[in-house]
Image (tube, rainbow, N blue to C red):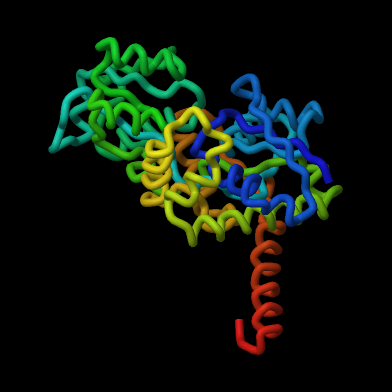
Length: 317
């Protein structure tokens, strides 16, 4: 089975997919997966709608946004990231940082997707900080945002990986907060498809989800160095030590989902974040936008495989 999977960015944040590819987990399920990076913020949804990809990896907020505007449903069936993957950096050390330190300051915010911004607004509300009292720069993308910070613009920078490790290693920035820890567990990224394919191609989605769960189980048993080495072919531009540190930081805060089940409490937490920030205007049903049947089948199949292997060896699972 040949399939195309679209992701919004090439990022260490999506290491689970790289592990599934380079660890042979997709191949073990008889899948030939072509992973491509989209060409715009809405590329993940557009690729599914146009039929140029069978599966997309991206934020649940994309499906919520489309549904909120009365569009078609794009259900998510396998969770990949269970935490926000961004970090708040400052130009000067702040050993006693509190969120009130942002008042009257300038933050260069990540502008590539709406969920990090919505999380920032929520965290500030939780800590009693009026976001109107903080100056946010939200029109700089990627390298331009980093260049502006290096040039002296802004007091804080919200960055992902490996930018965070690069700036920390150079002494050009200091870490004051993990947005993943500050926001708490949320289904930040997951695999989605069309509602039609969800029911029309069960074998494809079963195999795909089993491969994802194989990758997740492998990651849970391996060190940051082992994961960083395996995914190296996708990130040859990142030095090995920096790649390892980035993976280790993500591992410590449990950024990657332990299994593919996108559970209702996480869905509701993310929906509340998006509602509070005004990104969506109404609540949406979990059952309309999430299907856990393939993820639960993947877990059941893993248990059955373990039992079969144990029985063959004359032991117990």
